[in-house]
Image (cartoon, rainbow, N blue to C red; front, side, top):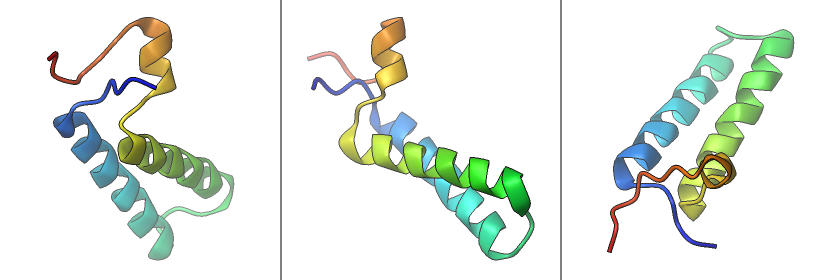
Length: 67
C-alpha cells in the first residue's frame, strides 16, 4: 500500500475527527447524525494513521510529496 496522504491532509483529518468526537461528547450532536459523523471521524482517524485514503487511489489523487 503506497502512501497517498501528506502531513497537512493528515492533520486536517485528525482535527476534524477530534472535533466530531467532542461534539458528540458534549451532546451537541445526537441520534442518527451522531452515529454517521462518528463513523466518518473513525474513518478519518484510521486513514490518517495509515497515511492511505482508498478514495484518493480510485480518483488518482495524492497529497503526499513525491520522492
